[in-house]
Length: 414
Image (cartoon, rainbow, N blue to C red; front, side):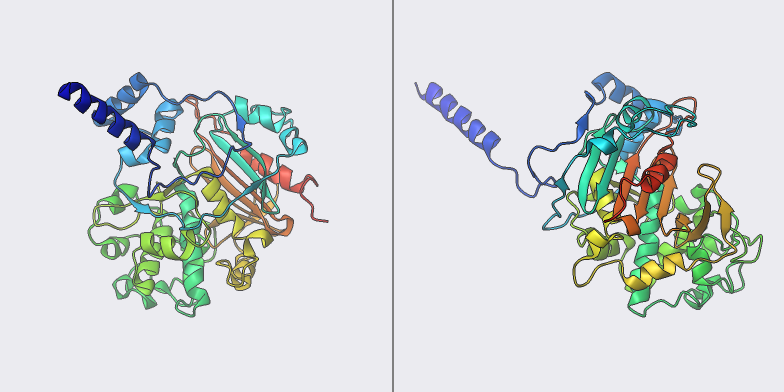
């Protein structure tokens, strides 16, 4: 009898604990979402085991397809990272799905999926997730190859978190972007960086050659290693992507703020945008944030919340994190840094780590494998998406579709 009573008590205790609300969760329950679903069921146990075995045995995760998508969605299982804590009071995003957006017809001349509705394109082409926010409200959201709560790697999109951090310090008078970077780092004097203004580094035109990522990921003295990078042309003369640019800007944020880049983003950006979930941030051997490569892992909605900070809907409060001065400086482009986009045919400029500043003021940053963040401040529009190229290295063309959506008239303000 005592044994039966004890067993009964254990069962009651178990059920009580099981039904107890979870505390300190990173997930905010805001009701049933209205996003499009496509019967995604995640990875099987066998697939997960196979991916980990492949990586453990030295396999290269950049092999595209599902192996790479697993890495994108499970960064914390594979590489060193720190956590950027979510907001205490997450920003609620109202959902008002629009059929005219869902049924928008994609350009016919796409390499794949041209002429499909946006909803069919997302389902059939290499898209993991897509969200569109207009006037602060979600008008389309779909997750064909990920779960809405997955933390997906952002890759180079993280670089605009770096430039935003620089701009915040610039607004406070703590950084003068006209000064050369060696003004802030004595260790860069008598190097290829000497005399290179911070503004040219922000515009991806430092003239510094691209350096293998392994150099920084194994570095115990980043400035010393950065000083070894060679200059191949005068700064400010030509767009020349270099991982070193984002790296040195990250170190600048840390030096001037006295915080790690992770702490700065958490305090000055992530919590202030009302992030619903905590994010991840990769770091290297000496603890320096890898903001120039793998970067942050976030949910799609939280990446969109960051994009909202650049729009009228996200700048309504008294102290927006994106100031008028910052928006002006992004658009005050160096006319030398002009190219014609091969994808859209538009003239685009490089500014504040944004890969494309369009002549109408729209902003875009893309990343390896099919990630992107498109913002149209004048239309109060944010488009964010994640993707993974297939094994034939074909990736989505949402960068083209985003531009077409912005210009379609669907989002013109009254």
